[in-house]
Length: 132
Image (tube, rainbow, N blue to C red; front, side, top):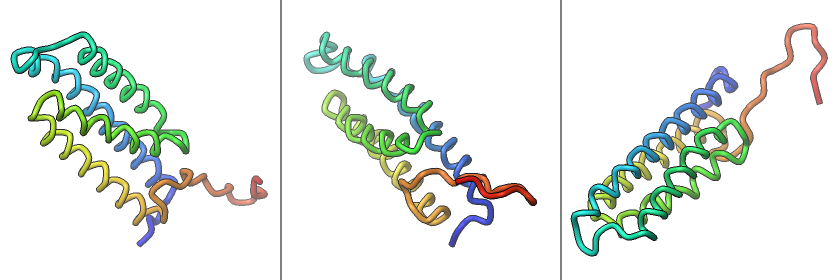
């Protein structure tokens, strides 16, 4: 099955990917509160890792309009899942986000033909020559 309007579907899926990454960044910012009260507590390297991950996730939100944006978002799912090493609840939360991301990739593959392909471009207007 392909989308009747692939340009519109590509933009919608890019917006969904951006929203997922934004929610992941917000979630990562809640982790320090959870790990501060458990185990060895909140150390400098742990806090640095979490803040850097949140910032990178936010930056990846803006990259979803670019062809490599989806690939960057996919790569960032691994460090998100690995936050489970810091707080056990993040295994579940990170796992849910990874499953949502995989569902987004599958939906993109069904609607656009490729999960990582470049976003579709608008067809030329009627009477206009195609742009190479």
